[in-house]
Length: 97
Image (cartoon, rainbow, N blue to C red; front, side, top):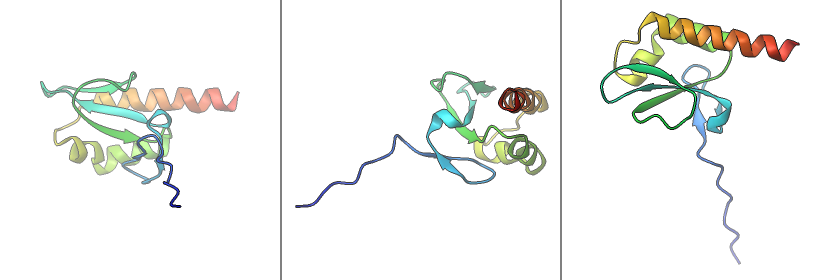
């Protein structure tokens, strides 16, 4: 008898470090159909999405190498990167406490 493999719940990959994990463990950035770029807190915003690890290293590398621009196929405003960096720093600080 063949035992089917268990599928994980839609694994995603970080744009920078290429780590695979479930979407809940990443930060999702979305290009909406109207072309605006937003950080998706709910995971349900309609549009083209890209995933980043919640680490300052991955966010800074994504900014330097324009990884989000390439993945979302649009120029990502600098304020989106700044919001991402603030969020990640807050997460890292709460982990240290």
